[in-house]
Image: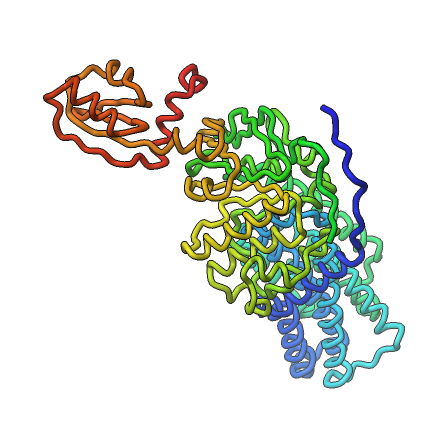
Amino acid sequence: MTTQTIAPVPSRSLPRIYALEAWYEFLKQLRMPAYLVPTLTFPLVFYTLFGVALRHGSAGPFDMPTYLLATYGAFGVMNTALFAFGAGVAIERGQGWMLLKRATPMPPFAYFAGKLVMSVLFSLIMVSLLFTVGATAGGVRLSAATWLSLTGILVAGTLPFAAFGLAVGYWAGPNSAVAVLNLLALPSAFGSGMWIPIQMLPPVVKQIALFLPPYHFAQLALRTLGLDRGQPPSHHVAFLALFTAASLLLAWIGFRRDEGRTFG
Amino acid sequence: MTRTTPFDDDRPVAELRRAVKRYGAVTALAGIDFEVRPGEVVALLGPNGAGKTTAVQLLLGLARPNAGEARLFGVEPRRVEARMRTGAMLQISKVPETLKVREHIHLVSSYYPHPLPEREVMAAAGLDGIEGRLFGKLSGGQRQRVLFALALCGDPDLMFLDEPTVGLDVEARRAFWTVIAEKARQGRSVLLTTHYLEEADALADRIVMIGRGRVIAEGTPAEIKSRVVGRKIRCRTALPLAEIAALPGVRDVRRQDELTEVFAAEAERTVFELISRDPSLSALEVRGADLEEAFLTLTNSDPEEVAA
């Protein structure tokens, strides 16, 4: 069949599309309490409670306000990415919004890039708030370089959990996604030492933790403070890279499955 | 504003060729052929489950045909240059609820090279006064209008409207029709799916009737109506079915228990013939055949279907 000649692709601004996509994604989530509570409120409240208010109750070998700053920061970033992608994609698939977007000339990657940027923005807001509480009420003192490297590691943690969220988003139903995410994220956050230092958990949990992605993320964050358990960082990075790759593969299979299923 | 015409010839802007789509054991489209030419409003008319939505999804590149081919502006429907000339209103429940009407339109407009000015979109879709409202706070009819605005805002050469007026009241439906007719006057093409004959009649240049994944009939609204808008005559008669079927204007006849049902183009003439042949005819009843019944008669008289 002969292909009709079509005028060359007319101009539209790709950077503008990506910027708008990210901005509206951000606005959309900002107006959604169901997103703000697990991503901003939980880490802040827990940190204030366990890291600041109760720090003297559990006299461990750690400087609790400093230690928990890293782990609750990691917990917050993980939630931000998981819920942005997991709940977001599942719900938007359920509504048919994804289908409509796919019918538009939107650059396909803009949707995911928008969510990623939004997720990073929320992580930065959450981390800044957390650091403010830590530096004031918690009395945490760190060098500027340490503050920065901790921020960098925390924000980089968006990637593996965004990938896993995407997989959940393509496999869970719109009504079950949030429940599935909570069921996975909360116990694994606890078991990874994000709420209470891993050293204070029972030995069996310490063993299980080695297989939990949040554990490896938290250890990398703690390493910037010199409070990790001393395993080589390459080990943590490799684990998280593998986890990211497996999640993306799972998401890809789910996406393909979705394409064949739309029916009417 | 000057705008180049989409095509300087009459090649189709959208076409399905022998398209087959199966979902598991269900055959949604059983080899379907039709096209939309530039400036044409085509209505895909058919009952629920006929395959209308599947046809739209193939043309939009949202699903791939198992066999045959779908083309949009002569190219594969997923190509971005085809999509930039296309707007779609699908049967979806929602768009994100925490964005405002204006924000939704702003975002989707940005995907297109020559979007319509915001004012024009709002006016055409009847969104004046609610631009600042969150989508989640809108009524059903208002939501439907936002989805229409999203199809419209890129000023596409071809609009897909999948059951656009379902759930709208009569007034809102007429307002929709006015805008669609206006787009057609400007030379835009529209592919509309509907199960309302009235809607297809009001808007379309051409109606493609589909049922069970096949094209049953195709023609101008007048041609389709003459085939579809018939009467159903019900009576008790001893006449053999073959004799009734041979009467002029009779499209279909069937017997259920004691009662004979005759589908006819003109009831008066057929009733006269029936009574003159069988004076003992009784329990006579005449009423309009609804679209579902019209489909059944058309489907039964489709030679392909009989052969199958």
